[in-house]
Length: 55
Image 1: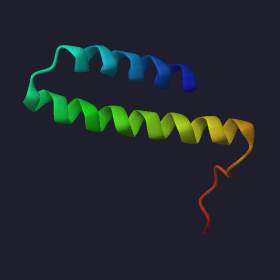
Image 2 (image 1 turned 90 degrees about the horizontal axis):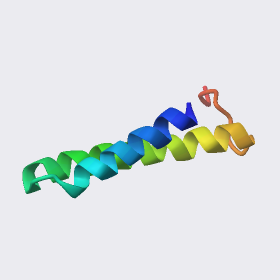
Image 3 (image 1 turned 90 degrees about the vertical axis):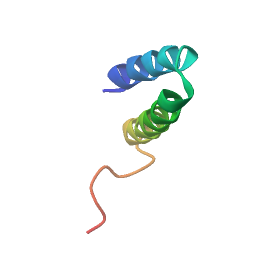
């Protein structure tokens, strides 16, 4: 899963380099989400957070 997220992040960064201002906001939002998902996935792999919901 982390490899797919890393690839997605790199693709979004590439798109961001050539984006016009209207597209830029959308791509930046998608990039932020992908980076957060990667952070969570890595923390789950390391065992620093529990993957199960708290309820």
